[in-house]
Image 1 (cartoon, rainbow over the protein chains, first blue to last red):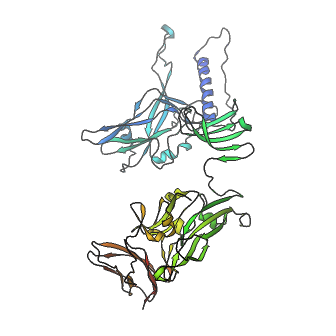
Image 2: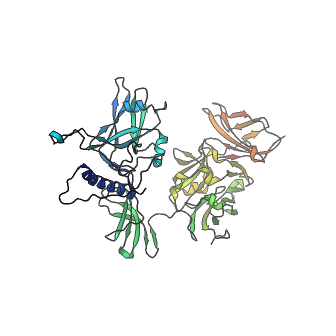
Length: 377
Length: 180
């Protein structure tokens, strides 16, 4: 059966009961939830930072009292979850979940979820119209914990229908928002650390995002920043109509201005203040320097032996023996096998007569992107 | 000319065995692994014949980035890396006065220095046969107040070359040694 979204309509003289008024509220809630659900990606929109404060037990063992700062998140149903003030994570709740392993180095995700609770009844009516029905919902929040595997499955949470409002169906599993991780010491039953992400882990607290297939600027300049405008030293990308159109990448200063290190203009010209690493299609990478006998010539940055072995790159090498300062020095050989240098000479060694020297050469190594035939272009 | 160079050193003793510079990225030694600069092994020559005789595997080597020195880059094996900088070996050739300071006889590997040592000295010896499986690395300790040290080393019949890395001395590559 098709579900239709209905918008309340009122008329003069209408007796307003609870249903049309609730309908007006639900219509707005549903619209906002669908916006948050389909035009954004769920996660933290502001605040909700985990903070650990060091404490000591009576026996002097160190632990962390972990709190969550105020903030807002949006879950995958479009429900806004608002934490208005700092909350302490409950150690007893963690213990009672019985999820901790014996390894104190393990990390446990901290989740936030929202839920509605009917507030206590209240009415201004008296007599026959008196009712003790609740007249509002409290939009509450809860924290819970899990194992690392739970943090990896957050994108498999159950979605809601297109017409549904925030929170999903009554009794459905709450949508979990990952806000950080804690460590636990089972001996003292306390947290011992709190972080946004475990070290060396790709799983981290989840921020809200935007779903968009097209983003259009109004002022002729589109900027993507990795932090707020006032935070200096963080990377940003600017697409700008000025100068005929260009794309710039660099670090921003406190005013948000990007000091570009890489620019591409509308003619396709690339300007880089650093090095361009990696084989360029149809291009060449060059390395040069001095190498001693027996060594492999270094490859240009970004070129690997694997690329050479797979004929993705062709090497051209030029070596010349370097004069070693010995009287009557005569180069005997100066060549390469692959990248290995064979360089030796002999010289007049005074009373010792002629002797061999392991030599040193100047080299130039060029790496060409291979063409279809595996040849350097 | 770049301002830094990459030295390939024998990790246990600091003997410098090779050098290279990179004009584009002189600091890159910080990121290089020995196998990127020596492949399967760094070839060390016999100074008498001029032939490559011994291959030192990358597992025994380290790459260090130091300030460029023309003197070092031209003749790296004259130097040892000590306290982060290359210094010329203080002593003369290991073979001065004894043309065969490192010898094998099929059951023992012996290292003999020109003079007694004031304290125990750990030397490293690489024995190279005709096949890769004949590449053997051994630590030989010269005890205090002596000038010789030896370890048991059973070798099959054949010819071998020996590279001796003794603190204070330049690398020594033996002539062909026969085990019968």
